[in-house]
Structures are given as C-alpha cells and as structure tokens.
Length: 254
Image 1 (cartoon, one colour):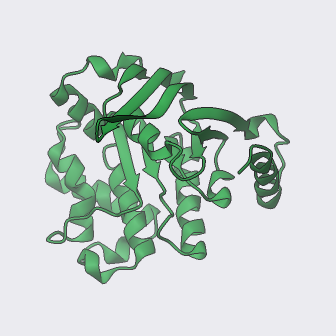
Image 2 (cartoon, rainbow, N blue to C red):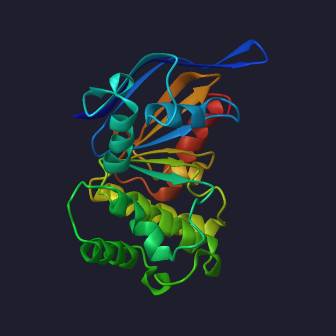
C-alpha cells in the first residue's frame, strides 16, 4: 500500500518579485515499510520536497496524498493533528526545549496528543522504553545541555516515535554528527524501519543513503533518477551497497 503519493508537485517562492521554481512537477510514491533517501546537490530542492510532502509547507500546485488523504484539502487544525499523530520529524538542528529534561522533551508530543488517551504515567513509561531501545535511558533526567550531540539526536528519534507515527520524515538526521555517531544513529533508524516504520530522509551522505531501500536523486527541482536496492543482489555487503550507489550517483553527475 502507498503511504505517500505525490503527483505533479510544484513549489514556487517569490523573492523580490522574482519567481523561484524550487520543485517542478515532481511525482513519486512511497510504499508502507520503505526507507527512502532523497539526495541531490545543494539547492536542488531536497529539504523543500520533504517539508512540502509532510505538510509543513504548502504546495503551489499538484497533489500530495498521505494514507489516501489529500493534505491540500485539510484545514490547518486537521493538518496539525495529522502531523502530530501520524508523522514523526527528525531535523539536523535538534529542536529541544531547554527548560525540560530529555525524557520530558521526548514525551511532549504524546502529552499534546489525544491519540491514545493514556495517562502521563503511561506515556512516561513508553518514553522510557524508547530511550532504552535506543540506548540512552541513563540520560532521561538530564537537561539537554548535559548530553552529547549523538545522545541528543537519538533522543530526537525517540521523540519522533512517541506517537507511533505511520511515517518519519528526517532532514539530514546525521548532518551534525561525527562518523561513528552517525553510523549508530543510522543503525537505530534501520532497526525502526525493520520493525515496520516507513521513513523518508534527506541526506548528502552516501553511507546514510546506502542503508535505505531506495534513493531518489533530485536536480533543480526535478527527480532525475531512482536507485532501488531491492532490485540488486540481496546479499550485498554494506561496502558493496555504498560502492554501487556511489557509481550510480557519479553517472548522474553527483
């Protein structure tokens, strides 16, 4: 089943009375359970695509359907509820509230949501379970300025999962991390995907994209190519996946 369907999507900004067509008739779909990476040069429209298909920014033209519902037809409140309850978000800049502990930051979307009708105690217990799963339970009561960048990004993943979303949208989730921490974060995202969570992420890192099932390559607001790992040998090693993807990207002018 397609969880996300995008058809002829256009996004135009007007700056100083000049039109900037950032997305130009973009069409693609994401199947439930997929992990899709969006790659492309700087300024190609990667982040704009992510924000537009997740309803964080409005489309100029075209259609975006999430679980069969056209998000352009939704009222602001309905769209806000959809994002809160059915979508999770991970950003390069780790937005956390400084006056809350790490655990309280993680459970905040669940406290705001009325999806499950749980008590705060039950929500807290789920938050702790997620922290345990991602190996950061020991920092639950810390302030956010008392933890490392890698721990904070894993906390962001926990927060994105707290309302058991149908899909996670991630913008450069490893962009501010060193290689080791980046690999750890991607391992955790891979595990979540293996458990059935659909993920769409923007990245400039071949190592990150090689963990995904499919890669979309965008240039000047158009999808120029698509690489599907499912159509390759199933027993490819991580290094082979990276090499194959890198060669494909070079052919496209990466």
